[in-house]
Image (cartoon, rainbow over all chains, first blue to last red):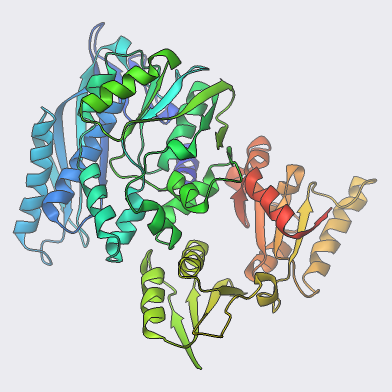
Length: 326
Length: 199
């Protein structure tokens, strides 16, 4: 669902109150955090979607990396996961389901977590994802609030997976599609591990609401204004070309019409604007760190193999979620 | 010169672009009209044409978009968007910043805005866009006295855009009954690129 439609429905539900809830649904964060005791909090998240690539094993890996990402975005370590599967039993052979689940399982194992169950429904179109539980010290939770004036923003993955998924359906830009597939299947574990050594003021992961949607959540949650340097954005190969030829998913237009606090400098080309709103699957982490640590963090990320990591903007002042893209 | 009509209504993204691509590849010389039923598809097909250095003219009929692309040497497809849309919608933009018309008696202003919108339906060409700002956004919300008129205008291809910040301020975001939500960038762009009248 688009951010606007979702907000409208959720606004009609009363908010449940519980003093152990450190992060709940009211702040549009990546996952919920529940304090068990002074040293331990549970982090929980769930996500599932329709196949974004043709290869079922790859789809399983991407869905798992995407579900696990919300745990990392809260600064937590994943512990357990539950499979959520919808599958057309009569239309597709069982090997396809096996490959999806194998992909998910391999990715969860890579994350050092374990799958302890799941639930399956017969449905026309396959869907897969996981509910993941992680653990974090209650004082070390990274939320989307907390970014401060002067902080630098660092993004750890290249943008354009939504546009390149459209390109894949059109059998175009195979090089970009392959790069997007690899990126989506990559865990945010290493980026999170490296960032633990720095003063992370705020963190979120870039998913369905696009770079600017999630930047807005951080800016609004932290009550600040953010400046994005469009020329510094890491882009997947051929993403801009694909956007220029109209392979822009509907979600990008939905995100664009919902985000009313974004202003672009006139010089920002249209394809780059599309990429800024492009819904990402298993996108990167977006960190807000003090200016003095920014270069060092980028360097550390590069050394750890998080090659796309880039400094993409900074927090200009207090505000209410305004974003300027120059 | 052959004319070809490709109906992409009901297709999910990127269907319209792929179908357009195929149609353009199959046509060496002639006009291709692509029909789509949503703005995202219209924008994407227009982008595809531009990327292939083909002009695209968009016409709006009954809320559907008819995009005509001309392929072949010596056939400039570049058609001014304004000229192409004269059947129903012209180039005029109205910027409405209050929920009544004119300064003076608010009671009279309420009567006038209703009369204005009703009359607007009768004139040709219709405006291309109506921008609603500040208390003007109340006109597009549930309970507005001119909702019927705005809905008719929208169904005839007039884009109705309400300022998101203003809807938030008046707590009307959930009550928007016609048109779409927009931001200041689009508002400024629309004003500067068109002949705009402020009411």
